[in-house]
Image 1 (cartoon, rainbow, N blue to C red):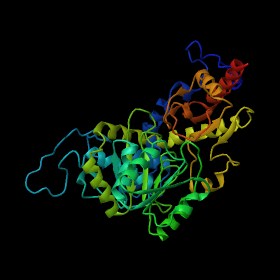
Image 2: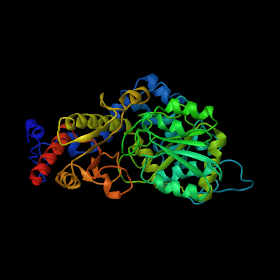
Image 3: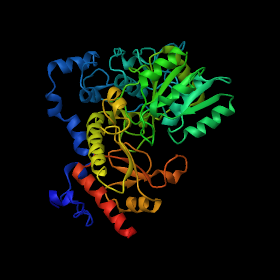
Length: 449
């Protein structure tokens, strides 16, 4: 398949399964990028200053790629692996009084500690990061991170550890689909739940007297954006805590703690790890007392990740910057192509200069994410479009190296039109991805005729 063949949407070369003519990224996702991040040549190209900065823990001035491949690693030990393997242990040797170090697997695990350090350095690279991960849970950097079995476990840990009967919480009414279920449970516990849209900072209007403000920006799946710093300042002035769901943006897209949030919360299942093969969540926080309350909740509920999942997540961080840059670029190119299609309405991507959220997003985001959304005329047209895609999986979730899309209305929990599509751009070659989407639009239109 020629270069021009890819651009005209014909899809030639795909049907026979050969893949001949596909770009390198489409044929080998994410193998090439992973090899580049860990190759000897890549390491050799680091200057002495970069290697020194990595070893002494002063990572604040490093680039995203350098930081991503180094975060959370222990000091090198001769004949030991760079990233130690997962520690499978329900208990640890514990003679005498239980002071410091590791004791029981529900509370701490060395594999978690490496990952928690790594995520903390990504969420807040300006924070202290001199703690020795081998010293156990008593030695911690300024920003503490706690990992969980899933994103919802992390979300629940913040909400239910901070709120009591009689408190009020402000949630977005256009956020993640499971939030209505969370609202039901909070209400059952005697907690007042107020909601408002993400866009135009509308949550400000219902903030008075609240104990906690929950922000999701960009919102999922509508991709509205709010001014985190403005909302955080207003909430703190009223005595409220602020938590930001950072799942769509990732720490490479925005850093909620630097924007004034008390908690940065995310599902590591999505773009942070990027391979669609683990469930994970995390909470990052600068305040030791707040962190202790979330840690206590994790201990009580037992919503902990397995060591293998934690190790896989840490391994995946090495390619985060490579994946994020490719996927963000693909999302923008695809959004620009979709903007030219008359059957596409309601196109949203914060990276488009004319998107309603772009102005605010550009002030607080460093990357705009891999997710875009748009609406096709009918449910039937949307379903035919998804069936016609060859390089895109019809699947829920987002952020993976393989592009995914779904008709979001099939779940029934989002206030979206029947033809609404949430699209997550993967790491395929942009020409291949755009050609596949445009061809699927053409085929779905022809079938309608």
